[in-house]
Structures are given as structure tokens and as C-alpha cells.
Image 1 (tube, rainbow, N blue to C red):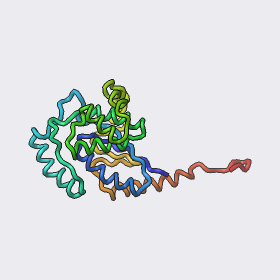
Image 2 (image 1 turned 60 degrees about the vertical axis):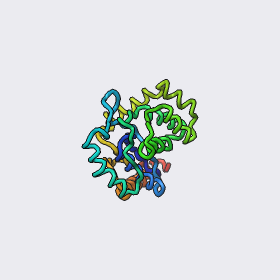
Image 3 (image 1 turned 120 degrees about the horizontal axis):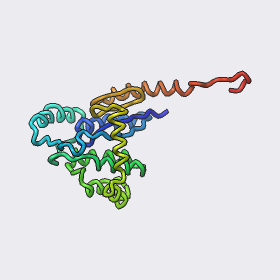
Image 4 (image 1 turned 45 degrees about the vertical axis):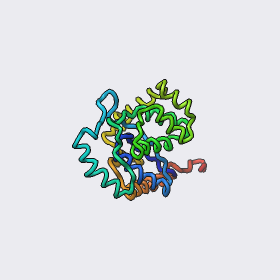
Length: 216
């Protein structure tokens, strides 16, 4: 039985981008279904994050993020999109993509566009181009973003993350009853997934019985 994973992330979170790598590897080896869930680190109208003008963030990039990327073999750079974009439009695009069966493909493309190509993922035309690259209907996609068709859907998803799921930091991975907060190795993910697989096997037989009339 497929193990379902909810991965909470934000497109401007470098550790979320790094966390995608081990998860992608696991998907090739295990029967898992990943659903990317939105979480905005700095939603509008709060001031945008601008690491190029914040020495502590630049130091963190050099001290922690780049070494982790090199160790994991991930090609990434600190985008010179200054300040970093708001991500609500990108997430609204994800809701459109999910409805068209391309949710994970679009999510992954937005991630690489930001952390590998330094594209402005707040720009509707940029997002529309990325949608076309994963074979989404670009005219309908652009119209959905311009009209804010998925605004309420996205706000409800954020409310779920902040209040119901009680997500406090990203990345956060929920695998069955297990919660992994922060960057997780392939080995750690595999260990938790295997526990989920074992539990699923047990659940397959829960409640099976015969009644007093001999019906089984």
C-alpha cells in the first residue's frame, strides 16, 4: 500500500530545496506519494526577505547552506532576486497545476527556476513560462493568476498549515503519524517510510471477521 507524505515548504527556503533531493531519490525506490503543501515564510504584506542586504543571512549561506548543498551534490545558488519574492502567486499556480495533474512537476520546476536559474517566481509571465514547460495550458494558467482564481484555496491551505497541522518551520515532512522537521537524509526518510509500510500491512487486516451466521 502506498505511503503518503505531506511535505510542507516554501519556494524561497533553501533547506526546502535541499530537502527535495533525498525525497526525489526515495520516490524512485519506494511506493510513496508526495503531496507538496504550501507554507509562506514571509507572506505579504510583511517585509520581504533580502539576504543580500543582511550579513547574518549571507553568513548562514556560506557557513551552512552551501556546504550542505555540496555534501548532497545539489547545484544551487543564492538567487540575486533582491529582495526575494513573495510566493503566494507561485503557490496559486501550484493549485492550478494540481487540478491538471501536474502539481509535483510544476512545484519542482518553480524550485529549480529560483535556486538554480535565479528567476523571479513572483512574476506572472515567468510563472506562465514555467507552466508551459511542464505542459500546462498557459492561457488558462495566466488567467487564473491574473484573476486570483485560487486565492481563497491557497489561503485555506495556509490556514491548514499554520493552525491545523501546526507547522512552525520548513521543511516539515509528515509520513503517517511521524513528523520530521528540518532537512532529512534519504536514510532517515527511508526508515520512517518503512515503519509506515509495516503499519499499512497491519491495517490491511484490521477488522476482518466472521459473524455468528458464518459469513466471512
